[in-house]
Picture 1 (cartoon, one colour):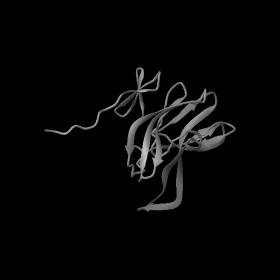
Picture 2 (cartoon, one colour):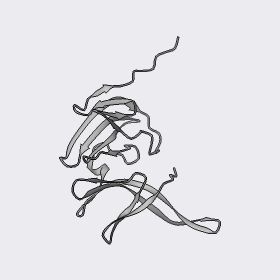
Picture 3 (cartoon, helix red, strand yellow):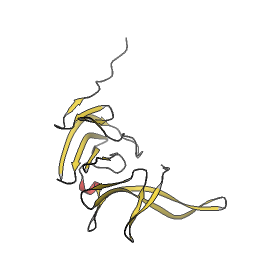
Picture 4 (spheres, rainbow, N blue to C red):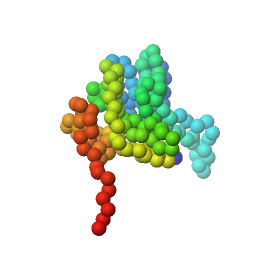
Length: 174
């Protein structure tokens, strides 16, 4: 799927770090580390009339520091760059949808990882999805609202990391 968006070149001084998705942004986590969504540019030119352009596409989320560079999917359990829809808070915590493949379906989790303390929390959302897409926005980004973290219509208590509100199953109309 093609995505529209803005791209930016990320540098540390004169050193090129990467090309990133400016719409997702670059999050500072800790003293000198960054999280960003990498963008790659195709080397095959696209001829649009008289203008030559190159397609760009997002690839993976990375954790970067001056000495290391790791894919978030290699660091965080059940993290998928196409499906996890991460949100990073001002206290260097990442909130994301955990997706674990189970045969032909995916088990879905609310996940929280604190980059500073390396502490991970997870809770099952008692939901199984037949995810048949690579659409990056299939799950909405988690949102903090007061003492709750919202994963679409599911509310998780930010202190205990327990589900406190979840929609019930659909009822039959009479």
